[in-house]
Length: 110
Image (cartoon, rainbow, N blue to C red; front, side, top):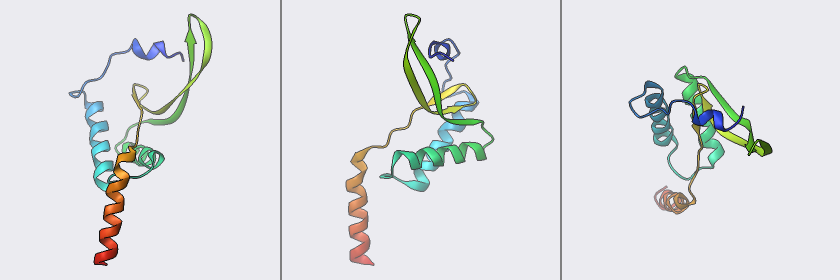
C-alpha cells in the first residue's frame, strides 16, 4: 500500500455513520479516562472501544512512502478503522498541571 492510495478514496464527514461511531468512541474514552495520560493508553482504549462497537481496527499499520516513484521510508498509522479512516492520536502535555492539582486536592481532602 502506498500513501497516495488513501487520498484517492472518499473522505468521510461527520454525517457518515462510521465517522459518528469513531467520534462517539473518542468522546467515551475521554469521559472515562480524562486528561493527562500517555498517548499509548488512549490508543489502546480507542481500539477496545471501537472493537466493542463492531468496528474492524488495525494498530500501527506500516505504510511504505514513495517520492517520485522511489521508496523513501515507512510511515506508521496509529489506528486504521475499517480500512478507510486513519486516526493519529496525540496526547497533550498541557494536561499534566491539571493532574497535579487533582492529586494535591485528593491529598489534602483524603
